[in-house]
Each structure stands twice: as structure tokens, then as C-alpha cells.
Length: 432
Image (tube, rainbow, N blue to C red; front, side, top):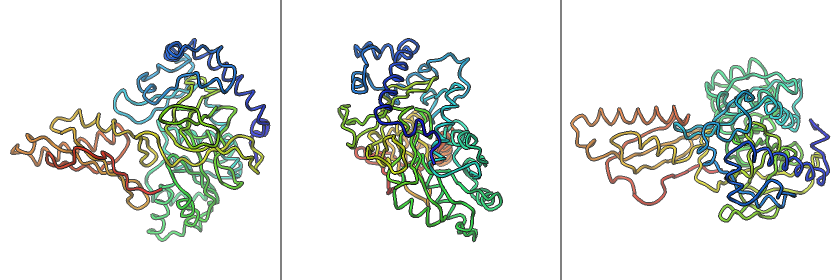
């Protein structure tokens, strides 16, 4: 099944022509409405009129996650706030998150993209969708929700957490589709087993998973646990959210990128050089239809490879391989994007801590865990009320990590000079 056959099965030359037309329009608009783009284009000595083809895009400067944070909150919006109907944001300490705006048309576009994804997974209006992606400022929950309603499916807006209640709803409401992170699906399977529930006895037949890296063995484990078909969904909150690319039922060897809405390039992450299609490199995205916050050549940090071979499903849009690597130090923990610098920013604001810390990421059961060890100052160690003060600081770090970054961390304060001054600040023991 195909949701929008006209656009999803366009001949390649027609797609390229449409991309150039839409690219020229969006470049003209951002140059005259967003100060950041005018300044960066002028610094690169390039004008919108200079871009006549996709190949010309290499003349344009990149935009990065740092640029998004530096323009917090609304500096990259290309429409007045009176036209913005929705705001989402990434996790981050005060003033350091990235903010994403949506016009009414952006919400409609996003819903259409999710509708394409769901139909690619064989989902229809007769399905009931258990949506366990997080609602709120995170784009996952609401993104999937609106797209599901677009195709007429019934939606259960569960959000994350409370595994026992999730399992009860899965039993009682009889959903046929589940949407969540792959690790949370395995966590539900573990909880179900502990409760004596046969997860294969549920009515689920399809699972749509994303927001964190997962490999074929994880897919096999999920499918075995639930007796379902597990499919991969890709999206970036900075660009629009989930729905930028989706795995179809044919072959399951990559996700179709919806090229009528996005231009994707692959670059060498060290040099920024554009690589030939099919080469492994960092994916760079340009939005063609986003109104509130268009992005021109956004460096995703995701390392992948484009697949150009025709797909049996009939969709003509290029596919991307599953993302398993990053070009930067961003960590994805339970579907939340976190940078070590964000954790540093929390620690710097707390008196009595040394600037030396170590982050250890592992798995507890199916879910990610984060342990944070931080050195304290000599003064804290020598104070008579040291134990109480240490406990107070640990609680403060745990609270700030949860409040600012949305992550539950296990914090341990250690004596000065306990941790190595050199070497990795982050130890990731997970295996994908």
C-alpha cells in the first residue's frame, strides 16, 4: 500500500526537478526573513540565485545543532509567532536547548509524512495504535498521534513509563500496532514475562520503533517476544520530527527518505566534502516545505549510507541504512539526545565539585542506564558535615539531570584525584 502514490512513486528526474524548484523558493525566503541565514550566506559569498541545481548546494554553508542553540529560542523562525501553532524543544540546560516551531501547514505536512510511514507498515483505519512514544516537548508522541488520526486509525496516547499499566492496556484494549523505542519494547516484554503474560497472545501484529540505535539482533528479539513485524522509523526533531524516513514491508533493508520534502546529502564528517551517493558518511538534511523553521544543510551527526537501488514496493525515493554511529559526542539514552557538555553545564553550577567526571552508560535489563561519577573538592571531604553535604549534592545532581535533561541518573561522588584526568569521559558499554 502507498499513501500518496503521486509523490511517493515519482520518477527520479521529476523528484530532482521538484527539489530544485522548492529549494530555490525556500532559499529566497530564509535569506530575506532569517538574519542568521543572510549573515551566513553573505559570509560564504553566496546568494539564493546562485543555486541552480542540487550540485550547487555545496556552495551553501552548513547549519549545526550549536547554531540552533545559539539562536535560542526563536531566532531561526522564518514566520512571526502569530503564525506558529506548536512549539517543541530538545532537552537542555537553561538557554541551551533547541526550539522547533510549527505553523498550521507544518502540522499538516508532518501528519501526512507520518501517514505515509504508517501505510508503508501496512497500517489502515481498522488498526488500533498503542503509542508509547513520549508526549510533551519531545516530538515523538504527538508526531505519531496526528499521523495515525490522519489515516483514520484509533490511537491510544499512552506515552512512556508505567510498564504494568501499559501491559494492562495492551491486554484490555487489544491494539494491533505498538509505537515506541526498541529498548522500551524489550522492557515491556520483560515486564510481561515477569507478570506471567504471554506477549504473543496480544493482538499486536506490527511494531514501529525509532528514536535510538538498534540492530538486526534487537529486531529479531522484539519479533520473537511479541510475534510481530518490527519496522524502523527515522526522524530528527530539529528537522520536523519522526516521519522523515520509513522502512517499508518489502525487503526491510533501509528507510525511504521522503525526498519531496527533504534533500539529503552525505558528507565526509571531517572535511565537509560531499560524497557520492552510496558512500558511508554524515547525513545532511535540507527542508523543502517546513514553514516555521526551515533548515538549510543541517548536519545531523548521523552516520549512514544511502541506498539508490529501486525498491519492490514501488516507492522511488532513496533509502537510508539504519543509523548506528555518530560523527560527534552526542549520546542517545532511552531515546533522549544528550551531550556531555550539557552534563558539564549542570556540574559547573554546583559548588563543591571538581571539573573531573566520568559517564558510564550500560543496560539494566533492556533499558539504558546512566551512571555519573564526579570528584568533589578537598574542602567538602574535610568538612565535619561532609556526609550530609555529599548526599545533598548527589540529590541536587540527580534532580537537575531529571529536570533539565529528562534523564534519571545514578550519581556517585568520589574523592579528589580518584578519576583519571585523561582518557574517555564517556564509557558506553552498550552493544548495538
